Length: 304
Length: 267
Image (tube, rainbow over all chains, first blue to last red; front, side):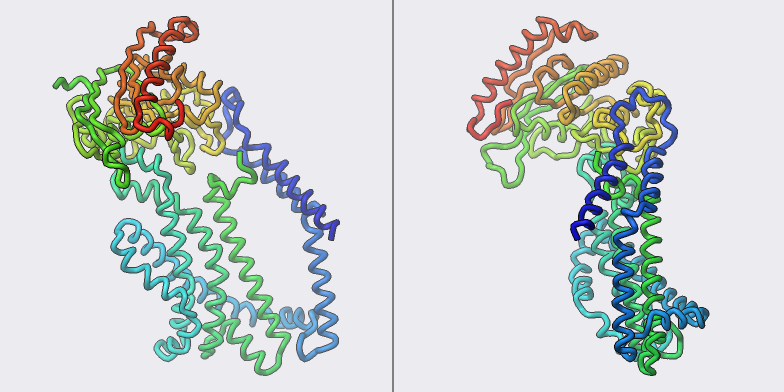
């Protein structure tokens, strides 16, 4: 325990050490032509090195091994409650196409749902920031929609839209709608007053303020919302599949059917796929954030 | 009324929730001649920043009239004839130095006023080597230089500066003052400069407007008869100290003329 704490502090020390090197541009007025904004490059290099360093990966690996052992012990004692890790692995390797197909079915529902939900939320947030009446008209309903457990509507949606993709996409869209709406609305309003003053003295049009100032300012908030909402979209898709099993595939359908036939190895293999997809989506957001938000505080290791 | 000056007549501004008998600005009358450098100085709450915002067309006064060379502030904004340097640099963090300086030329394009080339501006503020850096890679002084270059880019008729150096350390302030003087001397626009530093006001200005608080009023207008250009020798001259003494005395009397001096922070 104490050892791990020591490792943790050392890791953060190191992170700070590497972080504080690049953003010290004080004497840079005399520095010869700074080649592009490549200043953060050395930081990225050293961060990559620190990932390979045992200090970084060892703690998580230790926990992983411990968890794996615990799993195996329980699985051995109660094979009808937990399948062995080996069985799950064989299930995955035995028929990878089955899992890939189902994973793709779920992923496409999740992504279309996010596209619809987050997209409409973004547009609505733009409208709300420009027309206050829209804000007052829409916000109460958005809140109610958010506090309603959407899962509860799913059966009704299935009745209305059948067993196809529509009800699943709708559920996912509803789940992802509110976080994006609130975050983007906040982001669009988070413009510092002095900057707004500069734009006003230039007689910038509302459109210019929106495009050149508000939308870029809201980007960190939008991406933070996506960070929350993308994994959430998987939840939405799977839950919808549970309820509206139907003919179309999907990991949710597969997990439900496997559970009812006591194929626990398939159940956990499906769960593992879902986890992998969640990680994949998060990685995607992180990459986009790195690319788009290089200027934002959150992307800097330490504040200069 | 001449259209060559900035004229402010009977200007009163009350903020909602403020005491009625103590407006933020009360009956301000002020004339600022063309191509002069004028500083507004006074204790906190004297309305100097409010006055600047009124001149920038960002705040609408309750009474009175502001005429910038014969035009209203909003007209001046439409012509892109006002350069604003706020207290914080207010740069767009996702644009690099060059793009930030070029921003005024991209906004409100219909009014295509003549503007200085971005390269010249970069050179003028000594940032040609940092053109591709982003604001988070700049020191406070460099950021403020970018903000000044951005404001100067459109060759504005008026440059409005709201305590632009107040967040900087003394060395940087000193350097930026000299640089600002140089920039101004070459361009000769009218500058209204809000500050709470007596030394800064004296070193930079042709005229110092001392304001008193609660209500915000003009207490005194002092002319600074120091020679130009003001090199470092002039700045540390005994005459400079003499003028500073006068300004300080005026500030003291402004401070004690406020309705409730105990609420105020000494300048």
